[in-house]
Length: 441
Image 1: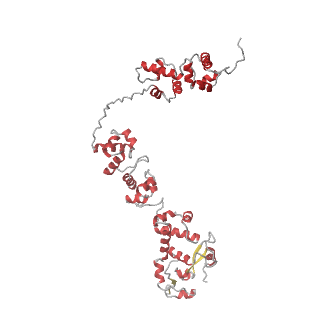
Image 2: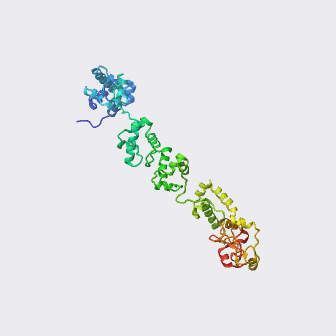
Image 3: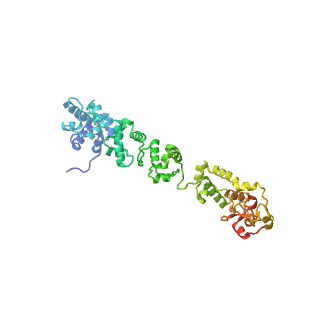
């Protein structure tokens, strides 16, 4: 019967007792295979420090007990396999098939190496032989030589078949000549297409996946321009007639859409509107009168029928457009200017007005007017500007009363001979003008 009460330490510590304890643990727990010191400590009745004190190292302790250390056993095992292979580099598979005792990970861990190659190099001074480079002679296919006319003829065939400029991928699929031939001959595929297009004036649209150059963009733009009869070609016209590139593409290559259009002999427009300078000034004046002061660009965009960007495009900036408008409106129309040279004096009464020789033809008994009833836009603006865009009767202005409408009133009614000249005109709001009617104040 085994005594259940066992001491966990040796009764005395000397070299003979320690050697007996080492033999006991190895025989009982490790089948006579020397373990590492940390594993020995799990079953021994002696501490690691005691082993170090008497033997210096675990390796010396095993040697005293008649055992080889695990490191020594691994070294001897590796040397034995190396001898079978004539001291040449061998793989782990060779090691195992020729009687190797240890697992690869165990060898690397115990011997402190990172991999199998380092293990053989540091333990046995063996290194992997350099790989032999096999040189294989490749027979390259000779590229058949084509003339430039043959290359262009094949490109034209595919071009016509698709109905537009073929992409690189499309030509590789449909062409009988490889794209590599074009790249060798012209430098790259895009230059090949550009040379063909310019030489033969083959102006057909591409699609949006094709690389473009300024020359190819102009070639496409000429195709579109030939379909637009009007001298003005807007970007909307370009899109409607098959153009595929964006406005940004033209800006990147030419600086702006306008400069690109001018290259093909057209003029630019904005959207569907094609406005003369007088159309721009008339719309600017309408908005000016509507708010009773000089409009800002944002107000023009909000209230006007023509966006402020078109004024900037036409005149260079919004303020330059304002100055051009004011300079234009300061000049009266020819009829008003000619009449003012006669030093117009408004009549004092209806009877006096009818008796003026310049206005009355007594033989025919009717009044001969030299100006039209409706003032020109220039004259209308100058009257409003003179009166500060304010009703001369009630003092209200669109700037202070949004929605107020100003009108031109003849101080001496037109029906009794009052000419449409700036001296006979004044600013009234709609309410005051309707209330005045045909009276002479």
